[in-house]
Image 1 (spheres, rainbow, N blue to C red):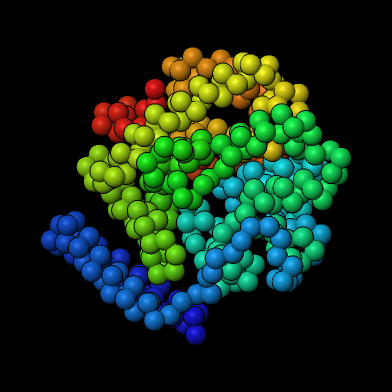
Image 2: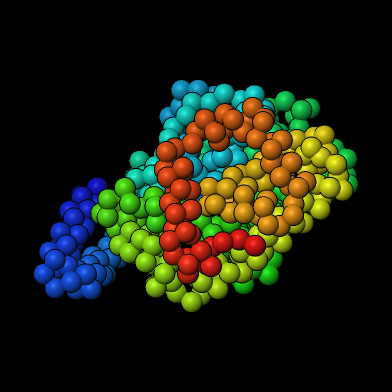
Length: 366
């Protein structure tokens, strides 16, 4: 039943796009956008009577769920996913090989995470998912802890010293996304949460190659309608969304995140100066480094990290970044997995900063 509804709604979405284009050509872009909004809202009302089997799932291992598998470890992930990067880094550090299943996000083409087939793997519709002997393990931080505990526990990625363990826990949290904080007042934002709003321009670039009907699919099935709605807007308006249409609350969140990420980077720089490096807990590479690496990589992709290096006087942070990028885990988990759209996004943001002063003022760090 759900598959038939999906096909019908996707077909209707295509009609919405075609009708919107025709109206835009005849009466101007405003008419096309208004038409699309009205029809999409009507389709969403129809969809309210049907639902995919999405449900909230706790992190960690779920032995009550069994899925087909061929290898002991199988990983469902996406190349540009922040959380997937963390798990891949951990797997390399622990010497764990796995069968790779690439799952598409809307940034890379479509909402495969919201497909009926993927809900059999993770009813919450999120990645990454580690399948260990046929049972899924959910949530990136929980997966990292799980892998660290079951594979060579003597070679742990957490310090045994109590004082260093507290340091690792502090910075591990800084490299984690805390859902309740996203879009909040930023009073206790993690580094990872601060970076998230600064990556909005990347979505405008990624959405260029994403069919509009695939974004509308998210309006029907995504549990948080604000995300696909934002993707629709940046798909339609591109750079002009940031120049003229950025809602005040989002603009305030971006400004707050911009201030907070600089502060966090200076705090990390001070910590690296005091501990002497090369890693957050001295000579031991830990789970804290995994999250911070993924966070700095995302900031780099959004054209923010190099600006901080140049203007914020953080030489110890820059030395740390240069050091971790030499590790085999960074090369295999991030560099070797990088998609062409990452470089395209970085280049486009740099061009927009040169051409659009308002955009530069909003997203230029320091």
